[in-house]
Image (cartoon, rainbow, N blue to C red; front, side):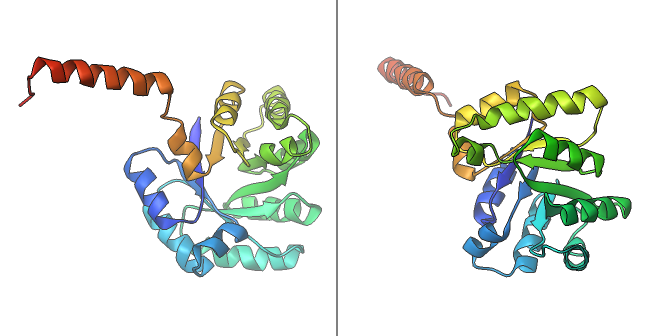
Amino acid sequence: MKFFVDTADIKEIQELNDLGLLDGVTTNPSLIMKSGGKIADVTRQICEIVKGPVSAEVTATEYPEMMAQAKVLAKIANNIAIKVPLTWDGLKACRALRSDGHMVNVTLCFSANQALLAAKAGATFISPFIGRIDDMGIDGVELISEIRTIYDNYDYKTEILAASVRTVNHVKQVAMLGSDVATVPPATLKALVHHPLTDKGLAQFLADWAKTGQTIA
């Protein structure tokens, strides 16, 4: 499974990229706002760091304006994936942008039927928001399973990009279900390395080594 990081924080992106852990980045208007920078400048910096897809989201809701904004965003770098909402106008923009050779991330997906429409429209990525579905008292991870089944049934090439991932358990669950990508906050990605038994074992090894009085040189 590929890891995208869900942030516009340049320092976080640089650190994770240097570790070789990043396959891409997703941004949205809220994350750009938190960064404090201009969308073109922040996105360009991210694209210079990360070789994989960098999702940049349109803010328009009508097709003509979506296409105009997408044209601006696509010029930022060759690895831009235009992010559009899962609406009729968004699907129309998806089809047109894919026909022009652009990567498209269809976002704000909350049902398997929506994901089916996005695949039919040629989406590069579909972004089901599993955490927000959990907030409604419904198992958001189950949506990943439903989409995986439908896409495999018909050999759709749209990649499932699990979004609104909030816990390390979410990451494990979507990986087991065959999600192509998980986009996670930096803190969640870093938390994947931790396990209490790893910490306990390391402490024991170091304590035993100290008793030997040896050094490795």
